[in-house]
Image (tube, rainbow, N blue to C red; front, side, top):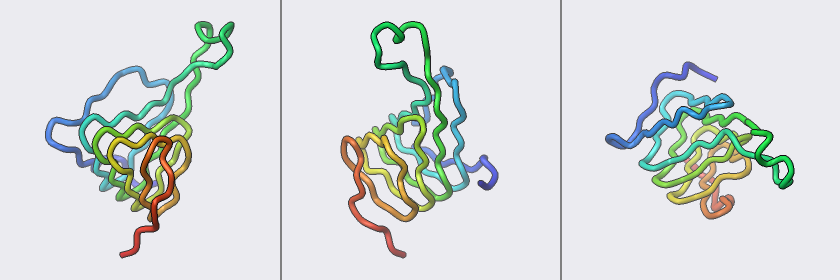
Length: 114
């Protein structure tokens, strides 16, 4: 992954919450719309363990990705290079490079060609 320093966001849209238990890696030339959530932490499903444990998985956003307004990316997901996540989507699985995904949960809509 290239350097992690050129992120474009909508004006005053990037809200960072400091509950970061796992890495959020954002590559160059990524565009992030307003109200996007990158979630790295969660809890076990079992009722007896929910309050005792916190789980953490990284989120990786590769180069030249566009994550549109209101999308949520769940821990353990990599969004592939040149991909687009449609507004309001909930991404629970890896997104292949050069792909448009959308929905809840996000599914591949189509390939993106130059």
